[in-house]
Image 1 (cartoon, helix red, strand yellow):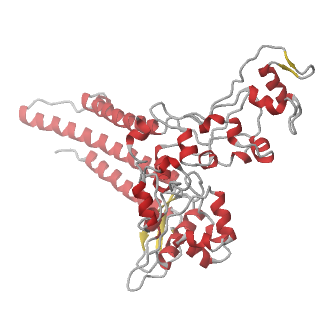
Image 2 (cartoon, one colour):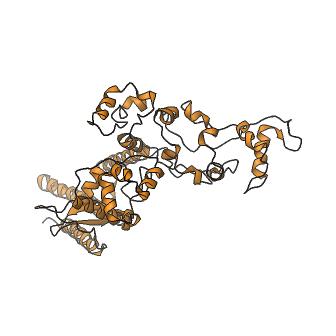
Image 3 (cartoon, one colour):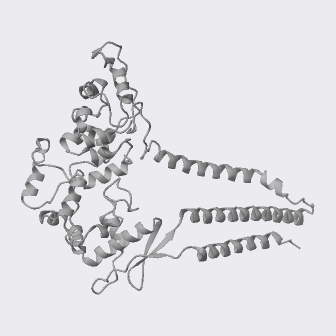
Length: 429
C-alpha cells in the first residue's frame, strides 16, 4: 500500500499557510478611511485616489510630503483660511490670482510663478474627494489602495511595507517547503511504480538526494537568474540617484550667507548657466572679487576665507598675489548620466526657469544638497506641466501657430510637451 504521509503533510502545511494569512489579516491595523465625499447627483461618491492620479499626480508627489515635483499637499486645507478660496484655487488658480488674494499670490511666487492646470469642469464633490484622499495619505504615510465604499466615500486599505515583506517571506517559505515535499512524494511514487512493473525493489529517494538532484539544482539556478535579473534591473533604475546628497566640501561655503543674506545672484558665481550646458563652478578669482575686501566671515572667521587666498595665491597681509595658484577641489553634487543631454542655458535663458525650481531653496541652505531626484520621470512631469514663457521671448517667435491659438482663445497655455519636450531625442541625442 502506498504511504501517503507526505501528501498529508503537504496539505497540512498548505492549510497552515492559509490559516497564517488569515491570522495576519486579522492582526493588521484597521483600515484608514478618507472622509466621505458627498455623492454626485444620482451617482456614487467620487473616487479621491482616481481623481488625484488623473489630475494632480503629474505635479504633486503622492506621499503628500515631498516637494520634488511640486508643492507638498499634506495639510493643504489648514493653510487656507477660507475653504471656498481653496476650492476656487483648485478649480481655476488664475482667477484667484487675478483677484489679488494675498496667500494665493505668495504661493504662486514661492514656486517660481508656475501655473496650475485649470480644471473648470471639476465639481465640489470631486474636490472634496481629492482633499479627503490627500488628508488620509498625509496622516497615514503608508501605501494606500483606495476602493469604492458602497456606503459612500472611499476607504483606504493601509499596507505596511514591513508587514507585506513578512507575508511574502512566510508565503515563500511555506510554498518552498510544499514544493520539496511534493517533489519527494513524486520521486517515491515513481520508485513504487517501477517496483510494481519490474519487480525490482527500488530504494526510496532520501531528502539529501533530492536536494542534490539535477532537477532541484536546475530550479535553484533558474530562480537565481530570475531574482538576480529583477534585482539588477531594479538597482539599474535607481543607479546614480542621489537625492538628498550633501557631501562635505573643501571650503565650508554657506549659500545661505551669500545668496540668502547678501542676495548675491546665482548667476554671478555660476555664470555658465546662461551661456553653456554647464552652470560651472566659480574660480577663486570670482571669489576674490569680494573677498579681497571681505577678509573675515560671520561664522568661520578667517579660516575658510584663508583657503580661498591659498587657492588664488593671494597674500592678504601684503595685498599681493605672490604664490602659485591651485584649484579648489569641490565635490560635485548634481550629476546626470552620460547618455542624458541637459543644457542649462536652454532652461535659464529660453525657458526662464528659476534655479530654485530644480535646485530647491539654495538661498536657505548652509550646506547644499541635491534637492530634486533628477530622474527621467521627474523631468517628464515638469515638461508636461511647465508653461512656455512666450512673453518678451524671441526664442519662441517661431511657434507662430501657438501664438495665434492663444490670441484667439483656443489655448490657455502652451506647455513644454506641446513644443516637443517629450521627444526622446531631445534628451538622448
